[in-house]
Length: 88
Image 1 (tube, rainbow, N blue to C red):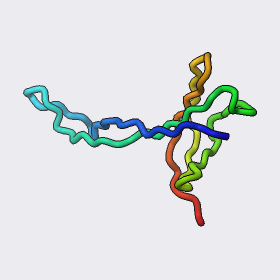
Image 2 (cartoon, rainbow, N blue to C red):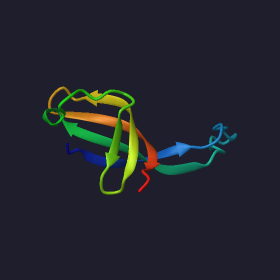
Image 3 (tube, rainbow, N blue to C red):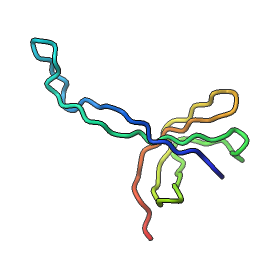
C-alpha cells in the first residue's frame, strides 16, 4: 500500500523551561523532525490501529503508530514514533 511520508520540523524546549527575570528562557531550544504518514482512505484495506508497525521501504526504517486522525473526506494522518532500521 502507498503512503505519503513527511518529517515535519518542530522546535522543542529542553530542560525544565525556567524563565529568566527578563522573560527569556534559560532552557535551550533544539530543532527536530516529527515523522508522519498520510494515507488515502481508499488505499487501506483495514482500519489502522495504535501499535501497528509501518516500514519505510526506501530506507528500511520502522515506525510504530501512536495516533490516527481522519479528515473525514479523503485522507488519514498517522502520527508515529521512529523505532530504527531493520536488520539486513
